[in-house]
Amino acid sequence: MIKLLSRFLLFILAILMLCDSGLPARQEDLRVDQHTSHVEHSHQPHGRWADTSYELHFVGGHLSSCSVGYSAYNSLKDGDAVNVRSTRVLGNCIEIRRGSETIETGKYWRWFGLIIGLVFLAMAFGWIKSDDEDGRRYSY
Image 1 (tube, rainbow, N blue to C red):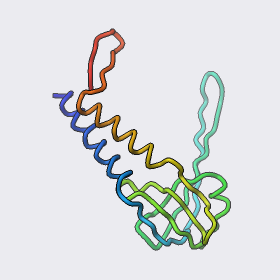
Image 2 (image 1 turned 30 degrees about the horizontal axis):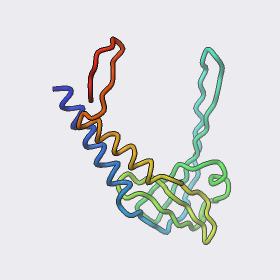
Image 3 (image 1 turned 90 degrees about the horizontal axis):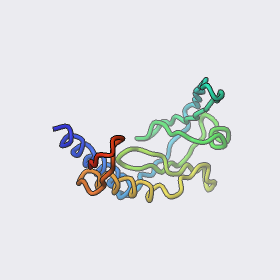
């Protein structure tokens, strides 16, 4: 029963990923509302590290926020008018433009979505088989 449920879940995820990368992108004219950043600290035995994630929040359209890199975070100010391309299903940001200037772009996003969707689909149908830690064969 768990195997059937996991295959069904993988099938649903595969359809979502394939639709997200296969449908045309949404393009909206938005306004930057605010900037937020979050620092995650980790104190591992082999060393410490910190990771900062940057997010832009928008008003005036369907998309409410995008995770961006540091350069896009610094180059856009609150109130700037931007054009944002995003995926239709999951709402992932593909490209942020201010006028004719490209601020942030995601290359190969469609290929990554298609590959992940196809891997999930293969796992859902049991075409990908693997071994567990005991050496027994199993498939998803």
